[in-house]
Length: 112
Length: 112
Image (cartoon, rainbow over the protein chains, first blue to last red):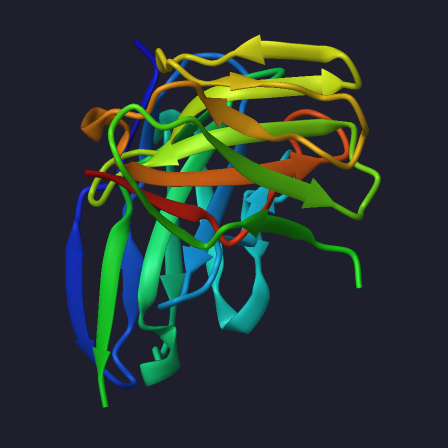
């Protein structure tokens, strides 16, 4: 069955530390890839997306993600996190049509 | 400002009651979706709509029903609420399939 795995359920970092959140999916065909973020008390919002082309995509607030097709991965990165990045991050994969599969989320807590 | 609205934000209701969760969007999107979200779990698609008068069930079995009489409105109804329906319900929309969603703030439902 198609699935999306986010390896870390909880991550705690200090401000200015670098961030990498892992995301792997199981689907052999063409995919569209997404990262969503949910700040405390707010709705889910799109952070960045990949459809085709340059596998390194940049999103809002200094986030970027790299699509590595051979590894079925779409890891999220940020060179230096801030306290305001404390949130839950969801990886999602669209395999065509309405079929978008979400991971279970990673809760990031950034210590000031 | 174009957006997607869900009401109520929180709802506590007794077993056996009929409830309707409201979702409206002002973006003119044809595609609308209902997801169920539980803490630490993946989001699961329970209903989606291609457009007016077109609805389909998602992957997750649900005892809820939906309707789409107007483009902007996509309510979800539970005829007889049960404690197993306790969850967060997220409404989302997109202009076309597979390009990413705009989410509402969600309705957190508790059935006692």
